[in-house]
Image 1 (cartoon, helix red, strand yellow):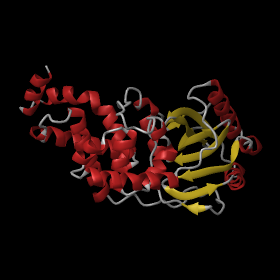
Image 2 (cartoon, one colour):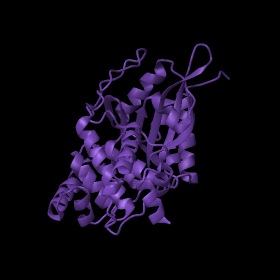
Image 3 (cartoon, rainbow, N blue to C red):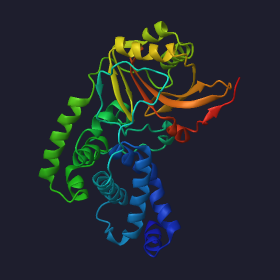
Image 4 (cartoon, helix red, strand yellow):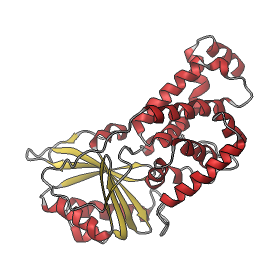
Length: 332
């Protein structure tokens, strides 16, 4: 059956090609997202890779599996995309009615975008024998942020080896390299990633567990009621706040509390609509307008450590369509 499909696909049958590649589509999309750090760029790279695979299907000689060959095509398309694209520039502060406190620092990663958990269902890649990371761990925003600082080839090798578990020989063939080179790059990539990952201070509660739900409910109540004391009580001492594509970053409970207090003091009242991104609790933020309509103003992802919030990452409302969120909510 597969041989017949392959013959038809090589003959230009698009439906046969889709049948062959559909089982791998979602895991390849996740791979492209990890490579590029952008949901939209990852989707574009996947479409480019699938087109290249169809046009170059005669180059598939069957020595490796079709899945391995597709990862080769997708990885190299993502490497090309990273080389060719100028990363989106950082944005200026856009909240004209809020005077933000001085940031702790300006971040390097301003193009990072969230990934909808709904698209992760059924997208788990089969892990090879040498995988070191769980699939969910390798989707967290902390992992994604640390990953994007690495050189592009380091990202590719680390993902293929430590996240997907391909053997060094397989990765060398994918990247037209040698086993020795792959092992050398992997060693440097692991060191670079570990320098960037935050130190683990405790495990997050299981997704959807009563413990997670309790923290989320407290957070929603505190944020929607602009209760700064209740919000601060939920934060770890070293809580980290970032806002891509704005470069402003805040580290520590005191300065994050001051930032959130500034928002609340400006009279901004926001409703939160829960969803999930990157395996973490997330929320569409809807600002109350003078006409009573609540307008989408941002997208917030929180990171939980133990029974506290250790990070908050705010994205723009342009991400709403990926999560099925409306641009606005009617007045109550």
